[in-house]
Length: 536
Image (cartoon, rainbow, N blue to C red; front, side, top):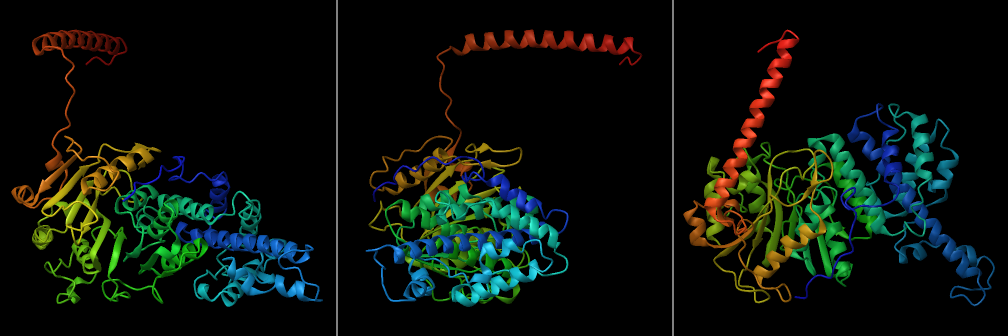
């Protein structure tokens, strides 16, 4: 497989999004602070941004059509009276350009003109209804509760005015990639503001990028059983387009239990023009598997960590539990087995789990892990640094499973598992959060690709303290624990050439001087305290 083309460098700010109007967007959210819960105002702001974008895109295409039918010799030039207006209002002209049809009463200019009216909430709700009526794929997806009494209409009007200053349809900002970044930026900020609840549906962009770069979903069926806001699908699409592929190269399947997040996912994908089957409704993946017959070539997921209330006691005889019944008190290995169940014969899965999944022996988890290892499904394990995730400090890791390690596309890896310890990777972007840089992502991904024997990836070698290719026998010796630190060993320290005896004499002399300096400082502090009546 050809190696990935070099990506353009992305700014570190806001998980790789560098939009130029981030602060305005966060100001928009702040307009509602103090008036509602962060989980509520998220949808108020995101709904308006969605409306502004599709309206801007509609107006832009409308202007294009107007120019085309008016230009002598133009492709749409006709002389029949009234035909000009027919072309401009023809829904098929917009559908062909992947632009949503926006009726007059739903256009942003109409709403902005009435932003100061006390009825603005109802006008927005009516606009959302009209857009859904004109665009069937959006039916039942858009937020329609702007008229509720608890929403301050004066603040709502100010919010509309502020969003009006952001040209989402401008030449520089009109790409769907930019709007996807807008969503990612908001989701990251809201996840930080909401704490644990936000982290349940937002996976940091750098983690998603790492998963995508490692399993390289070029062509086939992609599945996410807990898709949240659809970040995995968006990144997969970006990866495919960046490597010369097209949207038609993949089929996307997802499921989400939270009704609001399910709608957000539908909106996010609609804005990107990604066709996806997220099921007819939100639903619990364990108890209502909407994609029962799907066998995926690629699975990408970030399941909720350590779910204790997943209803496992009602699923003890489920066909998915091939490697043993998962404990009712923790869903980690229910997710793992669900994903294995949905993998195609040559499928690959990459997903996030809590660190406990690598070593826990509680409630039969060790037996399930042992059975999965002995079935030779574990392809690679990656230990992650702390502080990568919003809303949780639980240490996390990445699992990569492969149905067929002897796949002729890559090197035969049967009986082998790659361990990567990336805990020392990444850098702080603020006081509480870390991110992987492009270089970090490429280093980890290249190591995996080289180990798999991919063309152009270079030769794989074990690196002490970072990566190790281990056999099933070695894993058995470690009690079927999958923690990378057990296998990669300590990082090699470069020999500075100084003889040991000389180094020890130099260091002990240095330590003696430091002890003397410490004693002098202690004496001075005691004397100063004694002078002010606080002798110790």
